[in-house]
Image (cartoon, rainbow, N blue to C red):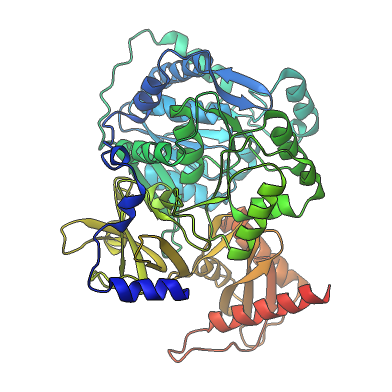
Length: 587
């Protein structure tokens, strides 16, 4: 905390304004009314008659709102032909493709719930998600067939729609994909559970009724997945009202965005940041969404160079990739109106480097920062005009409130005092799916009668309303923007019969920012062998998502412990950080 912050705290002590961040917003912004429409109707009504505007751009295939909405209608009819009713769950296990986005809106149009599953999830994780939601329909990225074919029998799923990323690619590119990647993908043979995408769409011709479903604001609209604050997989229930509220808040934050502007959507749609901030919000603003299913330096450069997008959102890993690749030295970024960083804490040094890069490449803006968690769809704070102070996470997005409480307490602290960041607002989740115990731990009623989301993060609020994140209360590793939970990895590794104890820590990584490392204590008489390490890798691969795989294993006889007789992972992480910095300095 700087000298002037401390001085302001002394001056304002006892003169606390209840919501000092409201001073940053206009009277119109402060009086925002959140819609009671369904997710689909909110987007459709905002588009109005501008159906010739482009909705989605996928590898150069630009899809108008007319074609996009027509496809959504076709998919909704196909689902109705399968007798999908309001409240039924449809699981979408896909990367960023037009088909996945269209399916998301089609589900909402008929009142079904879209269950968004990470396609890089391990087979057992996917089985858990499907079983937890009792989903009967799965939209599956075809490259994942081998991964799920043996676990489907243990779920309620009886229909699987197989979709390739090439479906909406330009024809020549689609042929190229089939020849290079498509031949590697195994597909089901004579299994009635599986149906190809085009065959599924043809079902719409057998449904002749008019679709008329009343979807209310408090109805469940989306299930997102996260480890919550403990690392145990959880389904996060988001209502139509909350999902739309995020889009409306986003519209206030990017007030310079105009219809026909372009946003690069590289953040995945199975994440609240990707689906809410980078798809639903821009589509509702008539901003063209450039969908990127997988990051590739050359492809990303071509998109930036050809389309000159106006909005770019990403995680710190993306900014590192841009800064460390000479290819991006040639970019003209003068069209950019907003560059938004989220998903992980943006260090002050990276923030400065990125701002310098933006100015050197013609952009007249500084990088903006968002802060939030899946339990609130995505962002809850944003560096709105005047609040983009270095190192801060901005102010509460319009309609939100923040307070700071001592951990495990509901008593609010004063300005400048560090404690757990708590959030109240329209985007807060309905709760964890089938898990009231964990829901009660993070959604707590305070003395003001309001329900507050306890984030598990530590920070403080300055007297001017600007919020600062300082550290995580919960034990979590953020790797390339994805939450990795050490406790979940430890539990998997300790299943091995030769393992006595395991401690997983975060270690620095040049590109991914942080990756997990496992310290393993073997049982007496067991030894470190090539076979043992392969078995550990196999165990992790079968039970953990691709981004949660351990990058480094060290076999030890003992580990440092805290006064409470727990492994001192903080000390271990400090040692790894010092080692990394020495190695970096020696290069």
